[in-house]
Image 1 (cartoon, helix red, strand yellow):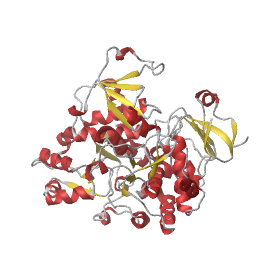
Image 2 (cartoon, chains in turn orange, yellow):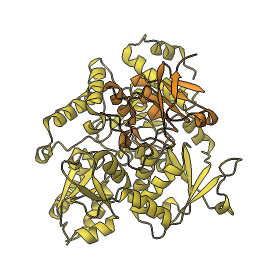
Image 3 (cartoon, one colour):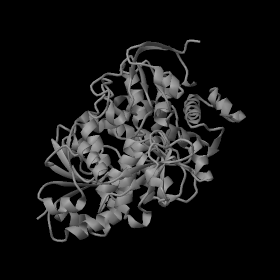
Image 4 (cartoon, chains in turn orange, red):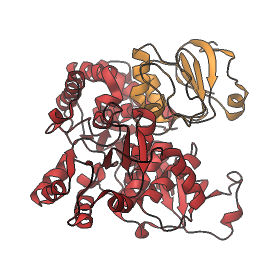
Length: 120
Length: 404
């Protein structure tokens, strides 16, 4: 496990098996996933522990993450299998805890479970 | 990641809060890309310019850092904004958008960023080979790494901004891999028939997704010499939209690589076929309208050759509906001097500088229901972020169907 952005976060897991292009796929005001081909289509990332393989697509997604935080619609924390610069820097500027997990650990997390990030 | 003494001091806030933020971003970037140290870079290209994409929160962020004295240290260029200032009043955009956009442009100008408003920096500036740069625009990063011989991460808007402010970037796996030959464990074999720029856009989109979290993907069955500039750009645009990977390499087909499916581990690369069927699937996903209310050309923006080629192909014919042509201001000025702009306008085109198809409010759902385009990148963002339908077809077909 690697902690890319430190901090404590608690919430219900919302997990996706697909990468997320934050610019094209997430509404920055509401946190709702708008990409109709995405497995989280119609769901909101607000307040959850968002678990997904990695970011994808636009570099501007980092601003989307920052805007979600500014507008109160950001995930409480994020967990990825692979670090990418858009998610890492978006979380760093927004102050959203971000962890990178090994594939086995990542696979064991399920939507709906409660998670606490940043606890020892 | 190891930091030198002065870098540690900056991270601790001794050089002010802007530098501290920039170094925090670089540390997150370095940790995410397995870098051991920072290296100097020569050129940063920023994204996060269009008010439609970064919104009020982004506008305030930029205003805040520029008013606190943020300055760029190296040559820094930037992405398109939301409109062409020369014609914005014709499009009925709200005051909020126009003033928000002006504020963003003003903040970048105050920081010392060149007002290039282009997603094709590789076409309007000389891009030196083997140079370490930091390009945030996804198509430009892939183009720089794959065609221009420069080296960049697929930067985020914030990592490129931090690089512009510090003049440094983490010496990432990708910057190193480039030195070591750039191994990839996924090969996409191109076997789609009679490819045009739409096919190459779809190939890029497909390959970007197949590459998964790898930073590079190999392409076999085609070589750069078989592709024109429009096709190269379309491929980079498609790949940047779907993927995380920052570059591709053209490789020769090796014996037996067709039956290696399910590989990807044990050193044997996985080969995935991009055939007519795979192309059709991508098209089905993004081609969502029968007909567009307007035609949009440019995502990535058109360069000078594409403008002249478009005019050449039109020769005497005119568009039956509005056709918006997006290009950098530097290209529009040249095209004006060469009389291309007048020719294109005569054929019914609106030539727009400083903006692009993707997420321009000029093509918002309050303005149009559907757009005809040959851009896979444009199609993805219009479908998913703008809520606009897309009639996807290659330029040759657009000219056949939509001109008289």
